[in-house]
View (cartoon, rainbow, N blue to C red):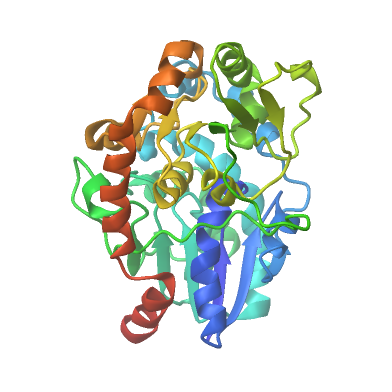
Amino acid sequence: MKVLFVSSPGLGHLFPLIPLAWGFRASGHDVVIATAEHAERAAGSGLEVVDVAPHFSSVAAFERVAQDQPDFVTTVATRPAVDLAEWGVQIAAVNRPMIDGLIALTDDFHPDLVVYEQGATAGLFAAARAGVPAVQRNHGAFATGTMHEAIAGFLGDFFTRYELPSRLPEPDVIIESFPPSMVLDRPPEGWFMRWVPYGGGAVHGDRWPTAPDRTRVAVSMGTIELQAFGLGAVESLIEAAAEVDAEFVLALGDLDTGPLEPLPGNIRTVGWTPVHRLLRQCTAVVHHGSGGMIMNSIEAGTPQLLAPDSRDMFQHSGRDAVRKLGTGLVSTADEIGPEMLTELIQNDQFARQMAVVREEMHALPSPAETVRRIVAEV
């Protein structure tokens, strides 16, 4: 079977798809990933990749929305993202540059199945073009609702250009990201699957990384988020962390950290690293609140502080679950202080609650088992 995976440009969107793609490939299926902006990172998974929008820039797309849709910026974008249909104009702006290249790939590859992440409405265009089933991988606790219909409303020209049906197909299967206990305030949309972390490959020098003698706290604040909002969130964290008796490791990927220097003696940067491996060496983690980072933290059993930039209204889907289940603290970057970081490190209750959710998650079907179910039932 030929399986086309489709991801929006963003590592937090792409990486959660990789274990499922591995499952299909290991089962003997032909797999291709369609994405943009991070094609080289995608290829690092060992899978074949097509960059369907070679010159795409997420930040440029957001800037165009801000310029062309000022009402959106001053209304919807100032409140937490709950109903993704309200964010249709921005999500459409990210999907639009991908569709022409994705349709061309679909025509060349002739997939039997399309698997896409929740923000990649373009995947449904590919499924419609090929006339094949579609499987959606959710992000965090976000409900799908009418989001794809709303997004498609800003992409109407593609229906005419490619002679597609006037309405996008519904996904045949939806796979949740969070385990059952973390899906609050809505019924499950589909199947549950164990979270298997993926953060890219790495060479760990000549020794396997182990936990340090000193308390260590990881810091990971997203990729697109820091590009869009700047380093303010990290600067707030550094100011507070300088007064805490612990080592803080800034895992900020390829971002230029020069403006943050000189760093206090207890803070260092590591550049690009598989964050799930780093978390297993840490007492705690501070991150921007994405669904992927929440699940990476749970898989590692590492208590977490969700502290996005206060202007980032998109990282809210998991906040209520973390707060309710007691697996960490919830705040914003500008509210972080030494006392909050100390509580994160010293409160053993967070680790105990994390272990409960981790056990629940580990009992769910693996990506390999989920692949077998998809093949049998879709």
